[in-house]
Length: 82
Image 1: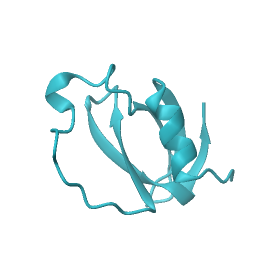
Image 2: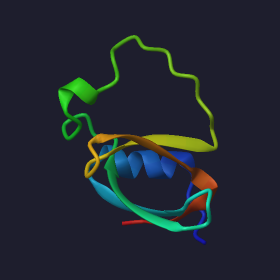
Image 3: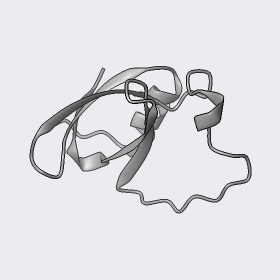
């Protein structure tokens, strides 16, 4: 398993849509096309300005472009980002 930092993944996803492959809690592998780019996220799904979000450094919330919703994964479970 490749070790990515939270910041490395966030920087990539802010640049556009990428495929993230990770191991889910049930042990299955998941491939997700996701982003953190505001230009790609539909306006109705963008975080509201001034919203306070409690951060968990081990988990990253991303916008799944196929499911059109927010999903999250554990950073340590990421196999690769393309």
